[in-house]
Length: 301
Image (cartoon, rainbow, N blue to C red; front, side, top):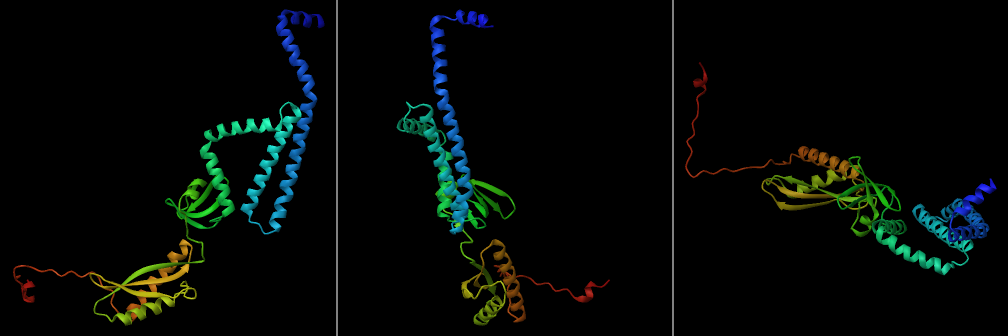
């Protein structure tokens, strides 16, 4: 077997044999350092696991928000792996100093940054959203035509459940660069309906009836802000009142309170004998019209 190997080895040209022998010699020389580098990586992996188990619990005890804890842990993990990679390279290849490794990493990072610009943009936007937290999970938001409840905020994207049940997964950069309406930033929100009464009715009396009806609705938060009733305009068939009140900030709160208020106002106006008019039309003719009356006896056989 040894003779066969020697025969095959002698087939290669001398320069190639010298080069292969140099590779083998270099590999055996660097092998102990490679093993030590792998052992160091395994050690750092165990350290990161310990950090991921202990640090989040310690941060939550301080009252830090969960989203901010996730950002801190991500930065710690990335930092530890970056440091471990640089040290492992210098252990395996002593000629590569940390400065040279960082230089190579910087050049490569620029190339990767251009290639994955959108990915990094959404990543950084996600980090800033989690740190600043302009809105949080369970908030109802509206941004660029996307309206619904926030279900999840990740490093890359935000999950919004629309009121019709559909889930929209949008990139974080959209919420960071565009105006976002946060409908549940407060517990209450104002809503308005228009109510018209006939021209023949007493305006002050109608206003009082409408105001009492709105105040008696349970979903109206008149303890936060007062109910406001304003005569708004002279419409075609009625005097229109702008009826404004405060209620819960969720979309379902708005719809429910509007339903109860409209029902209560209609019922109160009916009981008070105040007319909510239909549109009236007055028709004029240039020529007199001939009116034909028909006798009741003419309809009998």
